[in-house]
Length: 294
Ligand code: MN
Image (cartoon, rainbow, N blue to C red):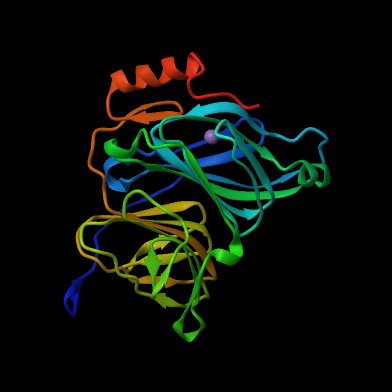
């Protein structure tokens, strides 16, 4: 199907969460990938954990994930409800709340903890978030660790026409606005709300992979069967345009990017290009080369 010069992308598939599990004792997740075997289709994205929404009773000890390492990629945490605290071996610390994003470059190696923020934990409440892992190309896998706290007020919002809704540009660009996240490869990350019965026609550069995760509501993409809560629509690299039509008020996370197209070797919190590099990562962690929390 072609409109003007820009062809619609192919919708490759619609996926439900492939696994449901607890990360540490504070993050109940529904995983969309890698539990669904999508590696090549979602390149440069490696993992999508949908956290909650889940209600926590008041607690004196903050729940979460204690000290653990990462190497070879970036972790991106997008918060919708709740408050999460981060601390790492490179000396960064930060607290993010609703509307904020944490963009951590593990690069050559980092050790961190991700916990419910202490005062929030004492009150209790609803936690609702997404954690994405974004791959790094070989040339940047050993980049210096970094941490970006991206505040809600620093994320530009583009209002779609006819009251269709806001597009918050976290990374990349949309509608003349640039997102604040610094990335190593070209990618776009949007937090989008669409009013009921709205149309949206975003366009990407040729060859980019695009996936849309539906947090709530119901919508169709290029006329393909409705996607609803916690479902992921994966599109091909062909074409450049999508037609998103909402049936109800919907909230989506839109991920687009230039595929890195390198071999992927994974072992738990490490993602490298070869098994030898994974073995080296395990050794470097075990011998303390990724540091410790002070
Ligand atoms: Mn982590």
